[in-house]
Length: 331
Image: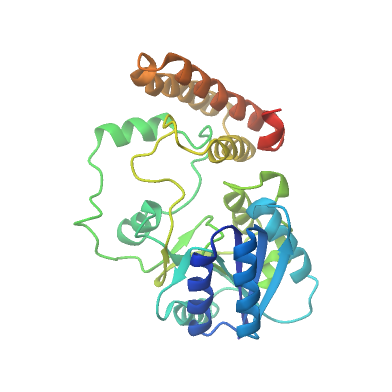
């Protein structure tokens, strides 16, 4: 089984990338494809050294950052034209494979392939991702909340407020080591190349955030079964959102907020099935955002007003399906 590890990196993140590449090689990757997505000069130098040191490494370079969606679209556009029979294992540049993680995917794939054709698998990231932990311990299927607005569902929100939440610290018995999922992240995705031919390329306009969910839910829509595999574990070396950080934090990245809200709004609008529920969640989210902002409003009214205006603008663009880059919105 030929397995090509694909890693997209950017900025000054070579200190993460190097660890992931070396771990991938130790796991038995046949090849490692690195997509340099507008990295710094220092990182480029490090990547060139890696490709010289390891013959199985191949570099793809783009001078400007075109986001994860653009990078994977570029890689897959080339890959699906190849005649080779191979598998991809996607890893973020900070997804460190643990010992035996690739072997676990191969073993799970061999067993599942006896009952279905070319399933898509995902490595487990439950240490930092609650959805993964809930899936393997409580059997909660990972998937979108249909008819939610921008991922917000008022009934789920109220239910979480007033019901007892599963304690993942104490209730950590793994009861579902292999469990179906409706979508997943790029980081940890394992699939035969033919599955990508069935669903086409990622939406480059998404740039980053929710692009992986919009892309991988297409597997479910065309009948390709997906599974989360607990025994294949990867460790996140860096987290996008820091502990204690929220949408009204003054130091949170506005780029992250913009693409998160715009893309998630668009994604959930495309899969809605009930206009009334969708509209209810739409109105509820607006009131909830204002409610959350009110707690900090009197400390800094101008900042909260500007932040709410920014969020509502991103949401509005997502509803309209307008994919302006973040930089264009600031002009």
